[in-house]
Structure formats: structure tokens, C-alpha cells
Length: 109
Length: 114
Image (tube, rainbow over all chains, first blue to last red; front, side):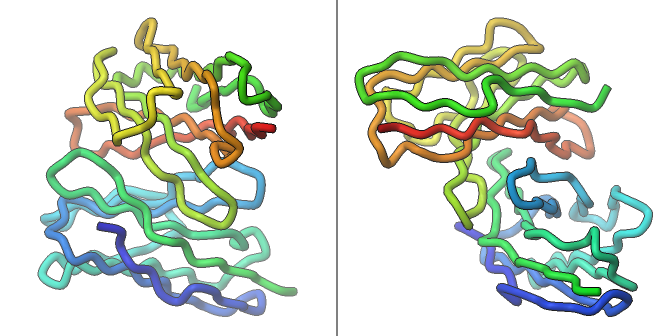
């Protein structure tokens, strides 16, 4: 089942913060976060594992609440380059990554 | 080298044509994936190869035929496609059976079926 992301869209000014949420109804093994700019490939940002381990870019932070099957991506002091569509991908015990519908982020000068 | 390459970048084909999409990675990954992405939608998994064997087929129509000739290459053979198959086709790779199995995506092939 597809995870649900919120909000669907965010508009920020440079320097502002944003939080993107991802929620699943299934028990999860891991949550992945990707950013996709228009016409480009999705780029890996962060992976969070059941049990608390995580791996990702230094300037990106995220959390994973295993009990609630929820993850949040925190974007602080946003830059123009942060603009794009953010997808969470959830992995249960099937080995498949199922992506949420995406959150479009626009950062304005 | 953390790059996944895909060819061609763009492809236009008729419904009676046969064409192939190609994907290559040199990261030593042993899992490779095909995704289909429609405009303003998330990528949808089509196929997964793990150690050169097809491990997941998401009930994809037989007009799409994947092939994994070796651990670095992944092909998607197309035949008798429909206009609704027009989409961005993304290839990805990862290292299976590891703690972190993040996927690295190629730039995609934008397919138009006339």
C-alpha cells in the first residue's frame, strides 16, 4: 500500500524551514527519502532503518517513528537548490520500495 | 563511480515497433530495477533483478520483457506497446543483502508511443 505524504505542496522563502511527513499503514523495515527535480532522476537523500540507524547527506535530517509507521524529513535554512519533488519510499518485508505520491517544494528568493 | 546510465534519453515508437531500453551501472551493485513514472506521479516498480535473476515482476504486461545479461547491464525490450505506455522509464541499482540498500537512479528514458 502506498504511503501517504503531507503536505502535497510547500512554498518557502530562502532560509525558511519545512517538514515533510510520510505515513504508512504497514509495518516498515525502512524508509527512504529521495528528491527529484523536473526532468531529472530521483536522488537519494536519506534512509532510516527500523531500530534507529540512518544514513544520508549531512545537511538533511529525518526521523522514523516505528510504532506509528511515520517518518518526517526536516529541511532547515532552505536554499533555492532544495526545490523539487520529495518522495518517501517505504520498504516492508517484501524487498520492494513503494513511493508516496510526492511533496512539491518550491523555494523562492 | 556512482552513476547509472540509460540509453536512449528519448524514444518515439509506433505500436508495431520493437525497441530496447538499456541501463548500465559500474558500482558493483547486484540488484537492478525498472520503474515506470508518469507525469506528476511517483515511480512505480516494474521489475527487480537480484544477482542476475528476476526476483520481482509486478504483474507487468508481457509487451515489456526485461533482460539482465550480466551484473552491470539491464535491458527492457519493448514490443507492441500502447499509447498509455508513454512515460519516463527509470533504471536503478542497489546492493542487496546489506544494511543500507539505497537505490541509485539513472536519468531515465522518456518514451512516447504513437
